[in-house]
Image (cartoon, rainbow, N blue to C red):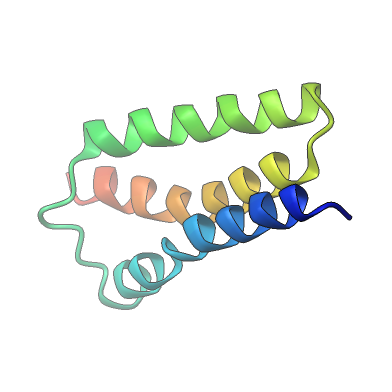
Length: 84
């Protein structure tokens, strides 16, 4: 694997894992106060588009990073709108 690919995988890992602490906190506390629902809708839509893009260009780093981030962000989005 080229060093450029390693840079991509490292970047994908860091940005993806950065959402994990927030997801854990929101799931544990059920507190979404202060989280913008509009921002999370836009963010999740962007993740879906990046995932589709990664699949279309057959780029595993882009695809997996966005799939995992989607898994971390989706519960926050759902809980944000459930708090109503």
